Structures are given as C-alpha cells and as structure tokens.
Image (cartoon, rainbow, N blue to C red; front, top):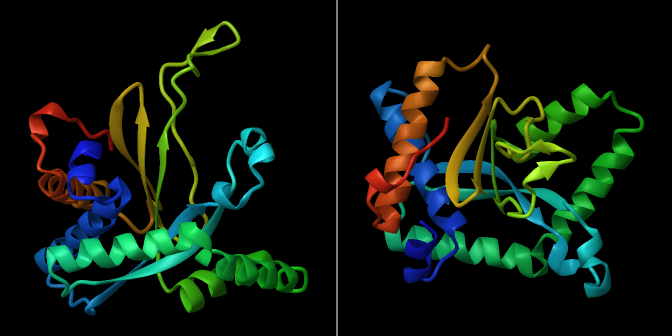
Length: 218
C-alpha cells in the first residue's frame, strides 16, 4: 500500500481516507440509507513538525484532533488531490487553528460537564461519529517489555464518546492492519465486518496491490 501511494505521489493516509469514504457510501447503498454528498471524518494530526527539533526525540505521541470533509461526488483523481492537499496543509501549520479551538474547549470544560462538552464537540462541531487515524509503523525495536516478548502492538486502543467507531491503520513487524474499535450498542459485528472488507478492497485497488499478499485484522 505504501509503495502504491508513493507511485501515485500521495501519502498512504490519503488512500485510506478516500477508501473509507467509498466504503461508507457503498455500505449505505446496500441498506438503502440516503447519504448526503459530503462525508465528515474526525482525524488526528501529529504535532511533531511544530516542535523544536531538540525536543522531538523526547516526544512519544503528540497529536491534535481535526476534521476533514470529503465530497463523495469527486472523481478518484479529484479526491486524492483534495485529500492530500488538506492533510499537507494541516501538517504544515494549518493545525494551529484546531489547537486554538481545543484551547477554547478546555476552558469551557472547566464549567461544563465533560460528557456534555464531548457531545457538543462531536455532534455540533465535528459533526461526525467516525474517528480515523494512521499512527504509522510501531517501532521495530519494541520487541520486549522487560523479559516479556511483545507479540502485537495496538495504537490508540480507545475511542472518545460520542464517536462510536474508530478505524486505525497501523503497521507492526511489517504487517499492515486495520484495527477497529466500536460501540457494540450501535454497531453489529457483521455490519462492521462488511464495512471494513469494503474499505480494504478499496485501499488495495487504489494502491494497485495484490490482495492475496495482504491480510486485515479486524
């Protein structure tokens, strides 16, 4: 997938973003669910490029939530260009606007119950129930925790309500996985499996890779 993204001159996360948009559209059509032309996703942007270089090695994880809107009527090329441009703009400093918003939310949360604040943030401002992120590969040197061998590595093992599904693209020991977290009161496992299969098919087609050479852990 990474090689396919490079050949298309985009980041792998761009393929994932358009892949999930198409998957949700197809999944909704199978259930006669009428969707609007725009899909909104919550994502996480690394703040490492904004940190002084002498402190970067001291940071394990520093991210900021933000949203991006995908037009389901875009052609494939239009989608890749728009999504790639949006992601790059945030990484290049555009995320500071979202940092300012978060600062305001933190001030308000001192006086408003956290549950109400989170519901307001996702439903009124983010306007999405889907969180997605691509934290990249886990460090290969992370093979043992003391004397215990590390068998697997899962990034971001939680979702913040009222978001009810989190989709995480992560790599460990050279294996690309799609890890999903979801609210069992809102999603049936069978329905989620179908959505992830559609996503995986879309991403591998976009990257023009052989599906038989890959596996998805759901």
